[in-house]
Amino acid sequence: MNRVGFIVSSLLVVLVLLSSVLFVVDQRQFGVVYALGQIKEVITQPGLNFKLPPPFQNVSYLDKRLLTLDSTNAEPVYTAEKQRVVIDWYVRWRVIDPTEYIRNVGLDEGTGASQLNVVVRNAFQADINKYTVKELLASKRDALMSSVKTQVLATVRGAKPWGIDVVDVRITRIDYVSDITDSVYRRMEAERQRVANELRSTGVAEGEKIRADADRQREVTVANAYRDAQKVKGEGDAQATRIYADAFGRDPQFAQFYRSLEAYRDSFKGKGDFMLLDPANTEFFKAWRAPAPAAASRN
Image (cartoon, rainbow, N blue to C red; front, side, top):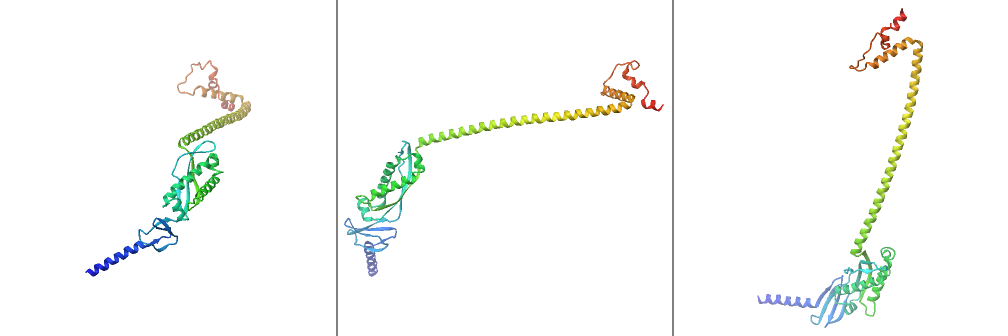
């Protein structure tokens, strides 16, 4: 039993010793070996490595991947026409020399990101006041990003190199500060309202014009139709009169009898109509007293 315990204890001691002298460097990392606080070795290739146990040697790691730094400060900056704008940007960067990075920047990526944020922010503040808002939004946007990248690279590669490479600097948003943005939106809304009112007024005017033209055309059409109708009616009356004259001219007695019948029909249309006349002394009932034209002709 003691032998088993001894073997187990020995294995544990060996594992502890191995864990203190062996370390693995991932392919996404740099391994930095320190000896009494000084950088002894930088391991760039992934794999299993050896070192002395602490406190003689220690190891730390730095990320070798491409990192992204997003802007966090929303403080407004001034353009060439003294307009306050807020910009959002991001930077793509990586550690390329761990020794210089640790000596001149810090022991981890967060320290480098914090210092890089200040440098990029200052570069944007120095360049934005050279351009107008229109230029920043359109023609000079690429020039601004290129200029900021040049300034940042000059800083990180200066007398005390940071051991990093800045791959890209990009602007994601340029906008007015909130109070100016509200004012711009109100002006835009007022302008749209003015245009809408102008369009409505134009539409009303065009509608009135169309209605007036339609009314005029209707009046002209009705007048022409009435004229044509009266013309046709006059022609019909004339033809009817001519036919009546021809017919009545052939037999005046029948014509007089026919006209008397028409007069009787027009006089006694209603059931309640009545007339006070003396049939013996009035000419109105002459047709009743006289013999029928047909009978006279037969006699």
